[in-house]
Amino acid sequence: MEDQRLIHDNIRLATNDLEFIWCELKARWIKKKIMKSLEEDPGDLEKKEILTYLQQNPMTVFPYEFKNQYHMEGVSVAKENNLYYVMHHGKKLFLKSKYQSAFRAKRYYSNLCMEQDVHSPHRYCTDSFVPEKDCIIVDVGGAEGIFSLEYIEQCKHAYIFECDQDWIDAMKYTFAPYQDKITIIPKFVSNINNEQYISLDEFVKEYHLEQEKLFIKVDAEGSEPLIYEGMKQILEQNQKFCLALCTYHCDWHHDYFTKEFASYQVETTPGYMLYYYDMNYASPYLRRGVLRVRND
Image 1 (tube, rainbow, N blue to C red):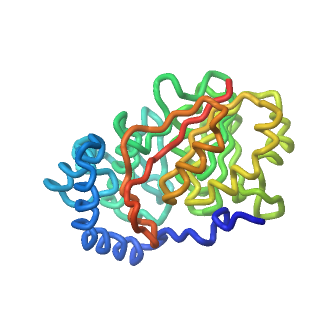
Image 2: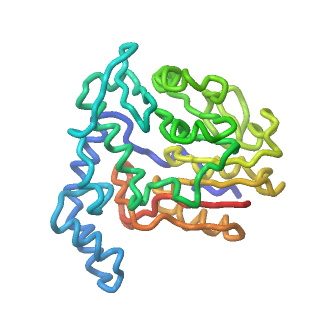
């Protein structure tokens, strides 16, 4: 029987300003309930750290002191081709046309940097878990493309999956200096193959990447189980890969993927996220951010 949890339609995340505002208001309303649940386990030091933070700070997705180090006032933005951009490690990173004010552009980039802080549960890479020289980057859920941009000079090629045309338009400017090393694929990654969807197995076959070492980043708004279902050949053929897999979109994803990848080298980012932008956010409130899997 089909596992109904694999149906992405059952996961609904905030997608517009009104839904984000509603989620933030709801989070404030349930803050005391979350704190009470944390108090029920006083021996858990990770939970105690979060409780202490919430007692002294407003509700936030990242309930840790490192968050307070990021301020958009320190971000410089400029405009070119009618789009805002920031300088990210000496490279221009363009933002889509939705970010029509310097305020929104600065806030967005500040949040991007905060998410990848060395202490963040959302951090994809570490010093020892990082795209190696001449690897193939597979960026699922590319958005603005910051992950691929970070490692574009050392990788052999980067394939970015992104269906938002506004992000695609912005990335064309971001990656203009690297046109020979970048391919943007406007399809959703899943477990089926048609004009709109493609599996990782089909992608590897179509681009003749069977002998390459892959660094796969998956941040796909809850469709991670479907993406996993579509990479079974990569696993069965023992292809070399590193996988940074987001698990915070749904409360059961971390435990599910930890079991599925039990035979591989696996580590979980430290800490938890309070991901209340899930429209169905409820207990258990704490969610692990990223699972790092390697087969090398």
